[in-house]
Length: 268
Picture 1 (cartoon, one colour):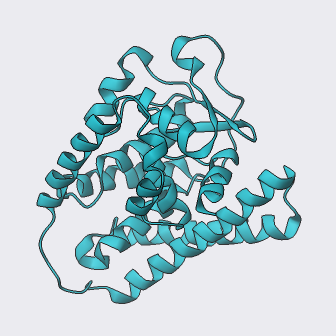
Picture 2 (spheres, one colour):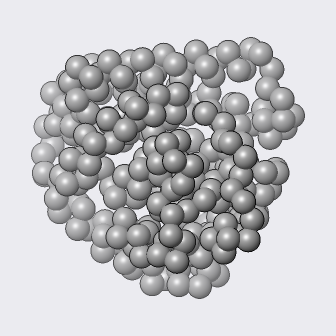
């Protein structure tokens, strides 16, 4: 069931940073369970074992930055609100994705529920970030920080707000509260909306039910170097993981300048 849900998100034009991140986005399974269930499939990808070892090293380094505090969040009500907003966001996105995959046309009721939810979350997040800055783990717990990030990530209707939030989020990277891969994800999303070009190769566009196309990438020859600095697997491995796990075809011909970038992207 979760495999289909993740495939629906990708096919509907959703954007992911890794197979594990896709599971987090729909709230289906924790990343560890997802990768365990796909272990046999993605183990066939060249370089997978070496990447896993490297990723675990990076995770340990990030964990070492985090304070070893067991104290509850100082803003419990805000923590609970962020988790509830994130849960609703993922719920309406999963429904919309399923509808798009099944019919290519979304009924007005589903469309309205989706827009009502994402605009409500956007206005609340913009007010929060404007008044208090991007929340810290001390304020809302690590799960609250994760929820806040995803809500900002999905605020595509206001790239200026996303850009301001991105500046604040970079400070959370330094503290270990936001991972480098997530920073890459938001960086690409902001860059894509502003320039139609991404830096880290995290953004895809649907062109068919089982085909996704990589958006244009800055200096394709140096893409893997930039991805490595952000804690992302090499592009070839990433593509293999997606194709093996979800039965999709990933078109990366833009890296070889063989075809133009996809048509203008959907705002959500």
